[in-house]
Structures are given as structure tokens and as C-alpha cells.
Length: 189
Image 1 (cartoon, rainbow, N blue to C red):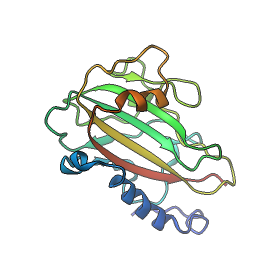
Image 2 (image 1 turned 135 degrees about the horizontal axis):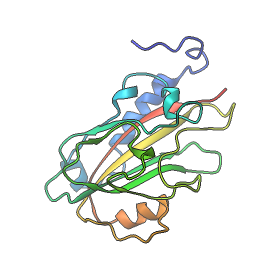
Image 3 (image 1 turned 90 degrees about the vertical axis):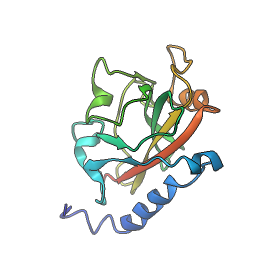
């Protein structure tokens, strides 16, 4: 069991937050997506209340390793979107990756920070391409971070060189065969 010594008391209610994150995985899907269940997991922080610092601005700021189950038939590529719905100015997008090969079953830790990744990356709301982890304002409380994997019926995704994560979401519309969501939580005191 992973323990977070002095943080546990300050992060009370995070168990309920974890339940909400699980509920997110079943939301916003149409009937086709519900029939084509796909599961996304983040082994490094599955079952713990707080994302480890190495995946945040307070640590190495590395993208976590991800694993997913078999996608539905007809999947030609994957896209991944990581966002923070609790940001003060509205949803803040931390990472957008796309044209991930349809044979992939996951991404290694640090894949979103590696030069020469075997997929394309959109510009996040920090203004850079690649993964930038949780970095909520100090004292703003617990933020949820959603990792959403999309199985797409298209490859490559038609996109220009200046693609932003919000544009990636729009480009994927109408091509989503299945989606899976996993998440974590983080706060900075």
C-alpha cells in the first residue's frame, strides 16, 4: 500500500473524487461506444489517492505509462487527451497525442516527453508540444486529471502543423469508435 504521510489529512475527500473519476469513464459515450468497451489504466497511480510527484511540475514532469485493452474492430489509430476540468479558467489541456499506431497496447512512461516519439503531439495549453503534468495553483485544492483515450476509424488524422489539443478534439469528432477514461488527482499546498 502506498502511503502519503502528511498529505492524507489535507486531501480528505479524495476517495470520493476517485469514485467520480471512475464514473467519468462511463460518461459521454453514445450507444456504439458503450458496446465497444475499452479500458484504460495508469499502473503508476492506480489505487492511490494522489498522483506521484514525478508526473507533475513538482517532480520530473514525466508522462505516466498507460495501458489499454483491445480496441474495437476498425480502429486505425488512437488519440489521447489529458486535461484538468478543475482549472480556474476552465478546462486546461495538458497533453494531446495522436496518430498512435492501432497495434499499440499502451505508452511507456516518459513517452510524452521523448523526442522522436512514434506519434504526433498537439500544442498544449502551456504553449508547447508534449506532456506537461499537473501544476494547479497553490492552495487551489484538489484537481482531477482526465486521461482520455480515443479509438479512431482514421489514420492519419488530418491536421495541420499548428494543431492545438482543442483542435485535436474537434478533428477526432465523427471518427471515435470507443473511448476510455482514467484519471488521477493532485493538489499543491
